[in-house]
Image 1 (tube, helix red, strand yellow):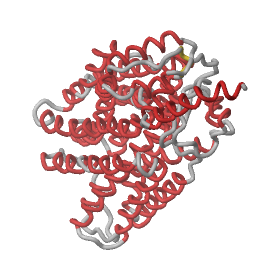
Image 2: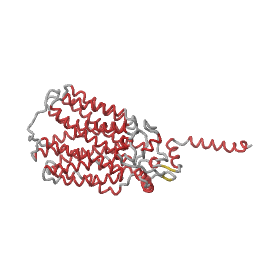
Image 3: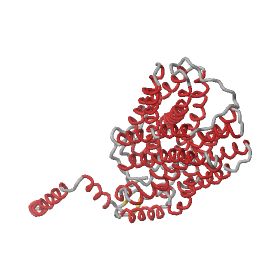
Image 4: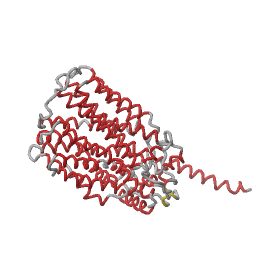
Length: 511
């Protein structure tokens, strides 16, 4: 009797729902679910808000810190030969000008990461830009060599916090846009490197290196002028219990993008300790941490190695591996000419095609395969250096090798903030960046010192290092393509994501 009464009205209702749902697209269906949840996470909100005007503004602002980072690094290849001549410095003192910056970076990277995890992404990034701007300007007035070393070391300590811009930017992006957008913001680094060479070409012949040091801080000054607009990461605010502040930030983003927030209230997140180094070596992360440390090391070792090898091999009279670079007097110097700046500009431009190729692949074949491909292609390009090749072929191979290794650098900047949770994401970036600085410190002794003894041994070291890094990329435990950012290690433990995650997993109501 009950069935006879209830079934007639229920059947049309079920048919109506079925027909209605069948006309909703996959994206619309997901959005419908998100908007009717009683609680939602930051991931849910960002998926509903999407990518829009707010993220474009954020990209331009955080990109200024990347431009500043690139300019401070490119100064090293311009400042050293200039001071070698002007202050009559021996070779080892010239090398120290570069080395002291990387030493400062080794100490600064984990420090800024710890600060960003404990006090906020905005706080860490703003203070590191203030620090770099102040000591960058002071170094332009360095009276003697000792003061210059001290001040440039402090600049290195400060600029090592610039990668936290990627940490911050990634926490405002929806899942589908994250890979492409982080790759695009990395283009600011290449823009900064090109701009520094052009600035040097204009400034150095007339005003000198002091003006170059001072004017190179302009991007950081512009960043600080507009940093008041920069909001704190809603992921960080939610993780630290500031749910209302995180909600206000998300409402602001939705308003600027012209979208609506999901219905309901934001799920609370259980507070957890943040910025602890031991958490990077917990059971679910230790393999990832160790592999990434080596990958970052190999990336910097190979990237700066190919930059230094370019000039060293071109100076050699014999490219067949039998000749030695001529040993000159340690006080003999040569000023950079306009032709030198143009060659430096052309090699720097190699980063743009590499970025374009990886941009097309990173969201198609995944982060791990893209990273491995970059290392393997780099190995393949330097392999012909064992043979006797002409200058044109050498130039082409070095151009392609630099394009791929710079592309790999951008992929690892995408992968690292995706694989670690919010509670130690900044520290992970800082720790891995510190390992990259170790690679940067070692590579001059290989590309410049060891090369004078054996070209074969030098090429072998870069070939083996990049080959091993490619293998390490493939055996990373987690593929982050399409994966929502984790807020806490507890989140991953709850989902059992110690291996490859579901590429369509989005935030849930739990932290």
